[in-house]
Image (cartoon, rainbow, N blue to C red):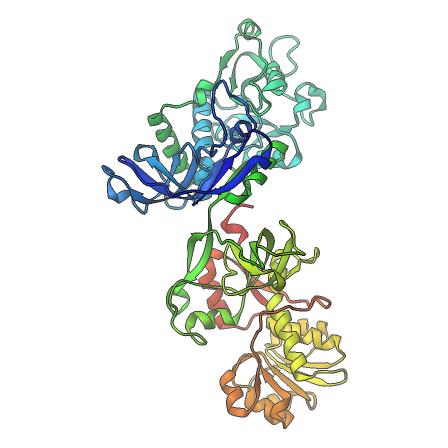
Length: 623
């Protein structure tokens, strides 16, 4: 299995992936197959060599203290019913594909709580609950939260607001302040405002003592250092100051004598340090609250395990909203047998690793094509001999490069065709099959293009289309039909297309002459046609031969049986390069989350929509 090690004290570059033996469950232990590993600011600090007086770690060591995943095996003395259960757990070396942990450390993950949310809340959830419970907030209490845009700050804001407090969130950067507002803060400020109340857009709370510019009842300080000192100064007499944050390198610079003079109660790290049984109780409570929609945090960065450096760099830049997590598995649509849409399932699978000439793509969107459901139904393939992927076109960002890949960069936005498997959060693609995504296209729009572009361009080339010819396209309102129509118009051809009456106005805007499909089509055509492209597959081949008078002038991409019966060419996809010099306008008819892939297939089989259907992978994992 792979682990990520700190090879020496230093920056994020000291993190390296290393192959080690799989762990074995000892007595009282289980082996957890890790789905997601939590990343804490403390991990980055320890990697840099901070805190040796409290954490006597020496490289090489595997960082990480929290994971979520599934129990794979159990050791002696462990109830075998644990095997297969989804769990979260505190661990000592969490940046790994598998971990061995004591069964008494496991926290069951409720249904409806994703693995990434369980990992993200495992440590900050208990801390937030403990802090807010200890504050004993009264309705309309004035609360200040520093570090409010971070992984712990956001749950505190949410819980304090739920308790009836008026929350002021202090955070650096507009994205963090926007997240704090979304979590329930009444107002947001940057840290300098704590020293300059006159800069606030709304009047800050004032205290009873003369000279009190700010006067909060409770301060939750998740930053420490000078920010913590400024937050302490904003606390009213008799208030409570929770000092638990050290991302600045130290706890808040607070004078105990001054706290005593003002009657301020100081609460330190002890409030977020738990005995094992107390931690499990609080963690279970946090995950139950997450299942009920009462507690969450923001995951601002989710990257594969082998990109742990990126997560640490983001933490150190202090610009990350919420949490960072490391992904060990991917979500992918699979089927094990041919059948209807009901055979599709969204499964957790190992994160794919690119081979020579390949790249791993973090999928943002995947197109839905007729070929997808035909393969699933068994129209063009033998019975599957194992789990089969779904989807042949995608748009996303390059996540990892295989050996020998040039011309692409990690994090570059791309789109293109792949072997079946695009309907996933991460997928493999041949580097040669990808193209840079145009900036003016969204990922959803880009995912609708690769198959349509390649198929349409290939079909027009095989038909020998040239300027001045008249082309009839059956099912012109579909993805391939629309792409072929616009490419044909760009070549100087006249295009007639069959489509439902509701799509005619859109087609006219493109320059297509629309006609309603069905019986009597010959009488409705505005004139003779030179060439026919059948993108429908609903029995139009015989009519097309009759219209042109020559089977050689007809090509179908959807009816191989009709093609064989009438001597017409059947063109099948190559999955190769596709042109990008002319990008047609292919509207997206509907977008489905990966979880609703079966509904997308049903919609595709029903037909009669304009453009393409697309699966949105963004909703399955945080980005």
